[in-house]
Amino acid sequence: MRIGLGGIWQETNTFAPQVTTLEDFRRYQLFEGPELVSALAGTGTELGGAIGAARFHRVEPVGLLFGAALPAGTVDRAAFETMLAAVVERARHGPVLDGLVLSLHGAMVVDGHPDPEAEIVAVLRDALGSLPIGVTLDYHANAGERLAGLADVLCGYRSYPHTDMAERGAEALEAVLRMVRSGRRPRTHLVKLPLLTVPHAQEDAAEPMRSILAAAEALRAEPGVWAASALPGFAYAETDRLGFAVYVAADYRAEELARELAATVWERRAEFAAPLVDPDQAAAAVTQGAGPVVLVDVADNVGGGSPGDGTAMLHALARQRVSGAVAVLWDPGAVDRIFGVTGDAVVVQAGGHSDPAMGPPFLAEGRVRRYDGVTYLRSGSYMRGQRVDMGRVAVVQAPIGEIVLTERRVVPFDDDHLAAVEVRPRQARAIVAKGAIAWKAAFGPYCARSIYVRTPGYCPAAVDQLPYRDRPTPLYPLDQDPVWEAALVKSLRPTD
Ligand SMILES: [Zn+2]
Image (cartoon, rainbow, N blue to C red; front, top):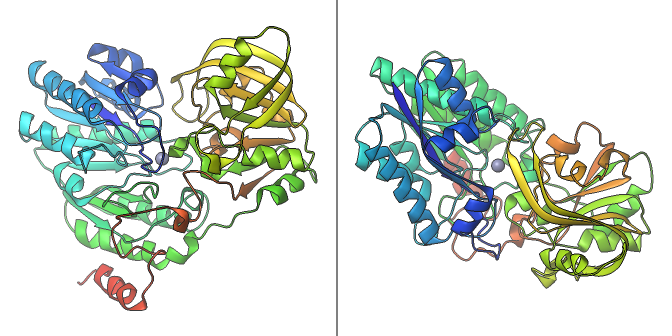
């Protein structure tokens, strides 16, 4: 038996300025054919998990094409169409396939393709007929009804920080295998809730997601249930698929169970409010008590598509005379200037080049260490084994602490990116993390505490700061009206 593996994976922040091109996929992850299998086998990725499960069940994994890019702005139309054509071409003209496992994010936005993930599945269905298709989705997927109707099973992550990608890939492969062997398919149902939530209110270990994920877990224990997901979604995208989604695949009662879970989510909606502290107050708090303190620069979340060169937190640290901090800034221009001069002391304007609203450039002055062409393998729980390329890196020992300037954007999902340039976050007084929750996989085990800071950026923690022009209505908490809210509760409750 042969199962085809592929996918196109990106979380798109439509408010972010950088367009995502084919070059961005090439730089991050782009594998075709047998190279896909050899590159991803043994990694903590969705397709790594699917390959492991395929081998365990003595099924042949056939690599089609997998492309992934870092979260950023809208994906270029030609990039998407080129990759999709290659997936279809390989699926059609290679060995005959019995099923497919696709690794999709679920919150991708492509210029000219309003629901790209559903389109990937639709195009493959057209090309290959009715073979079983299993899809893995990110916790932040803006999943819609069309995708749920086209795929035979959706397996959404159950963790945030995300640490279960390989397990979900294995789960999707095993579900496809079961369909091939039994000839049966589950019924599926997706409920889209008019509920917008921000990443830092979606942590798996904190309420309300802790209870919601436990309710999904309880559903999966019911007889005949193949998959059940609670997907909070991704607010930073102008798309008609915005909002929380709940999904169940089951032999029977899929709709009833999905509505039951959706009602539980809706009851907890007010608990997704997310408190924040002003930058100067946060910086001042660092000087009291034990460290390291993680200063969560939540709006400049690189993993949410923000550029990663916002300086608001650094200026606050300087104003409050904090020392011993560690901060990473994406600034290829500053790296270039530092590599263009000799000597181990520099003065350079760092960051603040993407958007003046995210803070003016920060004057980084001090001794410098230069690193040429830094790559590392992720060793933590996020996509373990994945290779990351930071480009050239300069570390400036400034009065506030070590400022790590990188040529490529870096997500703080591990602390390997700091170890690679001899920075020791465990000994820092403060770590500026440009993320929402994912940083916990890296710094969570040893940080003393964390403070969520009200910084400017493309992933604000208050959704009313986002300039939506054309979003679905109503959406809680942007729209509130007791009449439709009551009607919704009624419609979510199972009728029988
Ligand atoms: Zn995610």
